[in-house]
Image 1 (spheres, rainbow, N blue to C red):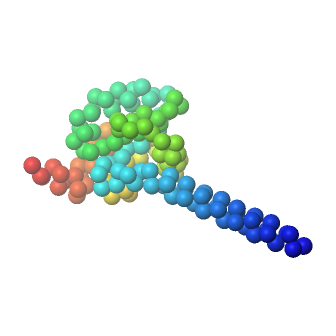
Image 2: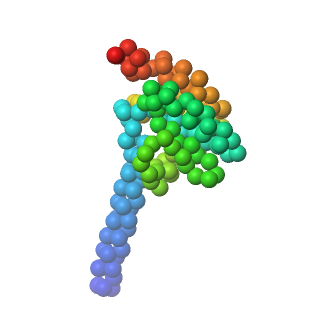
Image 3: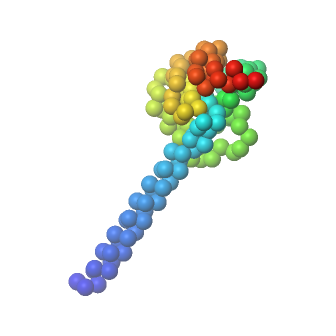
Length: 146
């Protein structure tokens, strides 16, 4: 019986360590999109068979995307593409996927510089997204500053 006490303590220690590690990993994953907060707007796009056409549309609108401080992530069966230069970490990929899953039926989700979801779109229409962005107070200030 006395030898069971250290074993139980050890088990409790391992369980607590495992739980804290899991919580820390989840917190890191949740912070991946926050790296853009107050710096850039984020557009998450889910595409199945039309990923090539969406990518072409994004490329053709690169100037307007840059003017609006917009970083985009295009999720398709072949992976995730983006206009950002850094690699897409597994935790960022997981958060992007989870955010899109939390918006069922949405082909795109627009996140503002404040980190909140500003729009959910069943079909991606950049003109509509740009129009919404251009009505945002931060964007209006950006447009008025020389």
